[in-house]
Amino acid sequence: MLLIIVASAIWVLTDAKSIGVRKGLIAGLGDMGPWGWFAATLGLWIIAFPSYLYYRGRFKSAILTQNTAAPDVHAETGPSGSLSGWAIAAFYVGLFSFFVIPAPIAVICGIMAIRDIRANPSKHGKGRAIFGIVAGSLVMALFAIGFIVNLRTAHR
Image 1 (cartoon, helix red, strand yellow):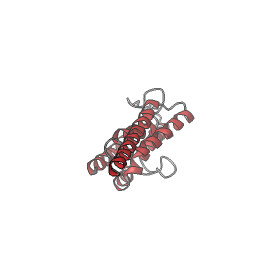
Image 2 (spheres, rainbow, N blue to C red; image 1 turned 180 degrees about the horizontal axis):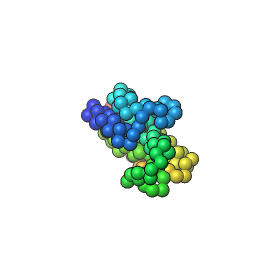
Image 3 (cartoon, rainbow, N blue to C red; image 1 turned 90 degrees about the vertical axis):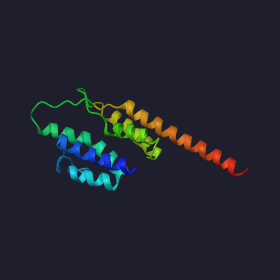
Image 4 (tube, rainbow, N blue to C red; image 1 turned 120 degrees about the vertical axis):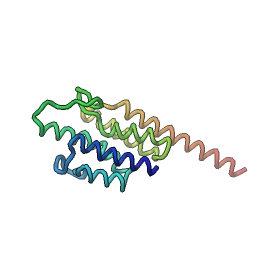
């Protein structure tokens, strides 16, 4: 688990530097530079990593607004709009819920992603959001079944 935390913190740092994240681009709690996001991800991964994925789209929009040059279209955002940060978080948390991350967080991120996509028609990522909801629900169901089976065998 420590390896996942450190690797994702390093990815956040390099990604934030590559897209030009800096303090003052957006308002609110997510207004940090690359090193701030790195420290937050290392210190409180379960909250900071999905938050960075959520704010990543806002940073990219703010950077594109400030730059007058043609926007750099990345493969994951596509030309038609931005990918919902909640959808990215739901996908990865759902994927990792099979290993280490609590599954309810994947379900919550998936629901937040669907709400975000409905509120912002230019955003996409509904498939990732649905995957997060399904994967998180599946892991929770498997956990509940295992818990019930364990209770039944313990009372015999």
